[in-house]
Image 1 (cartoon, rainbow, N blue to C red):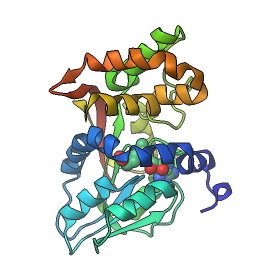
Image 2: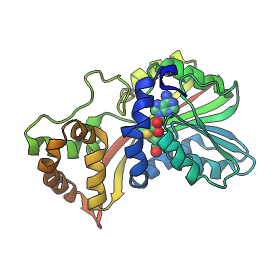
Image 3: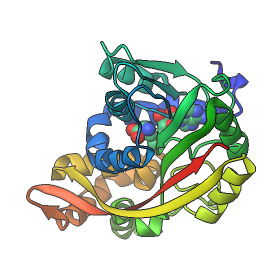
Image 4: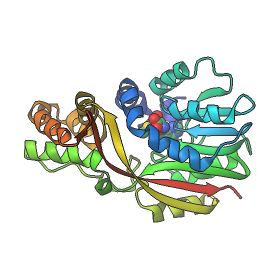
Length: 283
Ligand SMILES: C[S@@+](CC[C@H](N)C(=O)[O-])C[C@H]1O[C@@H](n2cnc3c(N)ncnc32)[C@H](O)[C@@H]1O
C-alpha cells in the first residue's frame, strides 16, 4: 500500500515510522498493560467455534491470536493493519497457526469482500480514521447480516490517570503546561472516540444498529518500575511531547519515576484507566 493512495496517509506514515516502531519495540510491555481489557472486549464479542473474525488495527497480533483460539481450527481470523513493523511482529506471533492471516490494509477503504465476517473486533485500533463514518460503513459491508462489531477505545484522558499522571509529573518538573488532548478532540488519535455521543453518530451514520456503550474502569499496568517508566516516557501524550522536546527528558525523568513509584503495588505499577467497550450489529 503506498502512502499516497491512502486517505490516512499521515497515519500510514506515523505507524510505519516512529509510532509503529516504538509500539513494536515496546509491544510486550504494552500488551501486559492492556491484555486484560482486550480480553474483556473479546468476551463481549463472544466469538464461537467456526466463526470468521476481522481484527482491525491488529498491531502486534496479541488479540488476533486470542481470537483465533476462540474460533478454533474450523474458524478463521484476519488481522488488518497499516503498519509493517507491527505486522511483522504479528506474523511472528501467529507463526504456525493455520487459522490466522494478516493483511496490510487501510480498514477505511480496503475491500474485505461483502458479508465475509461474523464479527469485527478492535482493541484501540479504530480511532485513527480520517473519515470514521466511511470506515465503519466499509467494515459493516464486510460483516454478514446480523454480524457483530465490538471495539475498545479510550474514555477521556481525564479518566485515564495511567496516561495523564506521568504527563502531569513531567509538566511540573519542566515548568511547562501538561500535554492534553489535541485542540480538536475529534482529530484521529487515542482519544478521538472519548465522547460516546460522537461515536453513536458515526456508527448510526455507517448503518449499524443495536448500539451499546459500556464504560469499563480497570487498573492499567503490571510492569515493574523501570519498564513502566520506559513506557511512560515513550508512549502517549508524554512520549509525544518528549519526542518533540528531547531536551526535557533528563529534567523530567526523576519526577516521572517518583510519580510512578507512588503507584507501586507488589513491585508492579498500576493506575486507573477507563475505556468504552462499544458493540453494535450490522442489520
Ligand atoms: C494503538 S495501536 C493498537 C494495536 C493493537 N490493536 C493492540 O491493541 O495492541 C493502533 C493500531 O491501529 C493501526 N491503524 C491505524 N489506522 C489504521 C487503519 N486506517 N487501518 C488499519 N489499521 C490502522 C495502527 O497501525 C496500529 O497498529
